[in-house]
Length: 89
Image (tube, rainbow, N blue to C red; front, side, top):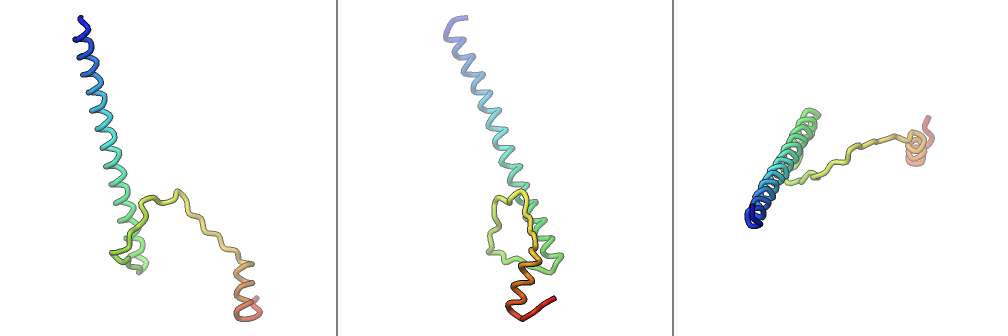
């Protein structure tokens, strides 16, 4: 094979690889979008089941932290309540 043919063959292979990578990127974007919509619908359903409605103008965050942990500090709460209303047991 001459140099021009080899060059054209390599260019065709690179084009096919780029097309394949583009398909992967587009599928990944679509999957992220579907996951976002699923999370939003699930959140709205949980809130609705608990009697909470969302304002349609509120934008939910695109990224949700992987874990949200809320811990209560009972001693701190007792101290704050005691300061507001007096001695609590």
